[in-house]
Length: 289
Image 1 (tube, helix red, strand yellow):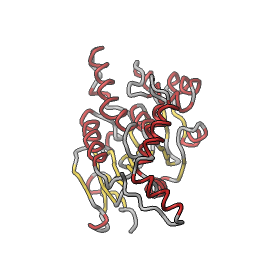
Image 2 (image 1 turned 60 degrees about the vertical axis):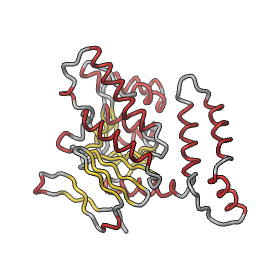
Image 3 (image 1 turned 45 degrees about the horizontal axis):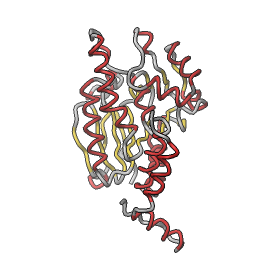
Image 4 (image 1 turned 135 degrees about the horizontal axis):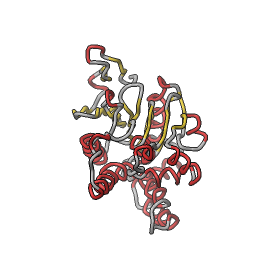
């Protein structure tokens, strides 16, 4: 069965909706105000659905993403999350500025602190991989959301940047830290200080995105990678996420964390199944524990 097709509903002011090919193809569809959540087999397709605002992140959207991601982390059937934006113009074009234009210093600090805790750190620490399918603008909080994801794929029309200094503020959802880790201090400084955007191809050259494809191929490429991930042990992938993240966490020795997670794998049923399958020259059927 092909991935559920997208189509524009002109009667609904161009809002992107899902055209369901088969009820059996969709195992879960939870209604939210600002996001679309659709489970197909072992993949959760999560769409930020505010196209008229270029999918800007407001408080309600962040709350809904937090709720949806927490539910997904508890669902043993979900092995990969593919996150994208509604429409063809934007993944997420930043935060909703009108919500915090009059904030005080303390309110600004709380905005960044709660946002990092409730969404951006949550994405980075998810026990299952999150693939950001960047379809258009990924600016400010949008790029920060992509940076927190484990894998990034961009359409060839994507533009990425952290333009916050043009508003008299700096990135507050982890952008100054994660961008520098990914592209180096020099390039991060340039992107932040100039408030400029880079193309998908330049982002690929700097290692900021893993792949660049035609927009019509974006979700198909994300699903292709997701299916490769699903073939492997989910328990081992969770351990790998923990070990890789440790290298970027203050006060944690990444090598020691790797040793710990490596050892823990030996006590899992997935390890027993994987090794027995290898020795018996068959494909493993991982129990996920």
